[in-house]
Length: 117
Ligand code: 5GP
Ligand code: ZN
Image (tube, rainbow, N blue to C red):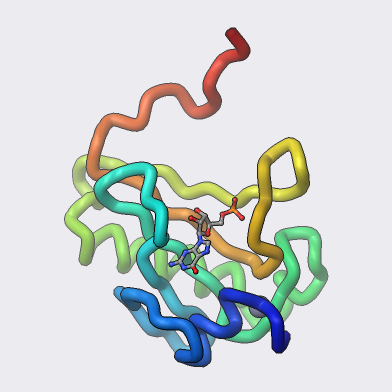
């Protein structure tokens, strides 16, 4: 999609620090990391989000999670642990409408969701 920031990253139009390339997915460092390891794993073709039926074609999700396992090894967090996260919709604060899996680790991450104060 021409105006999609992650499509531009995949196509090399916007620079990013790529950490892994698979046949149909790319993994690159988040520009605003929340932990020492914060990598985004995206399909190379544009898919809007996790509710987009195209996410369930051609083993895209399988490849994304397989890439996550590899990235975790490469980033040295496979032993210490990490969190895999997919946001959807306003309550989850989805910002970039190109399917992506966050891989976050490198420090204790605390509870899965912060409790309302
Ligand atoms: P979301 O809230 O949509 O699940 O997360 C989008 C993520 O994309 C955010 O963590 C944000 O920091 C990251 N991001 C937004 N723009 C860019 C960019 O241009 N380059 C990189 N590497 N990450 C980005
Ligand atoms: Zn896109």
